[in-house]
Image (cartoon, rainbow, N blue to C red):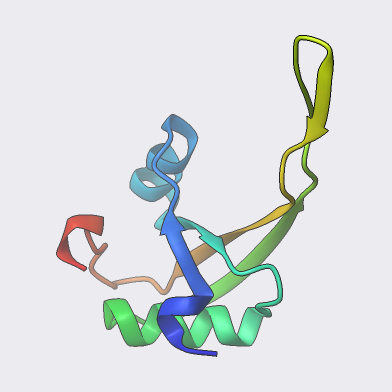
Length: 95
């Protein structure tokens, strides 16, 4: 899997920005079949930083309705990537 296939997109929410500023943790949506090692290598290669820890979270798609029609959103995977101490925090616009 290509390193740009592993990381789908950064998640820029209030919680994600707070973790980025306070805990040196980046938040990404990643490929559902990516493991922690692939995520670590992709972040290190793309952003040129050292990764201390990777935590993953599998989100199950919710039931959504449009009138009488119902369906499920897609399942997706989120990764919290903590950088080592002393590493410069990358900006998402620098990609």
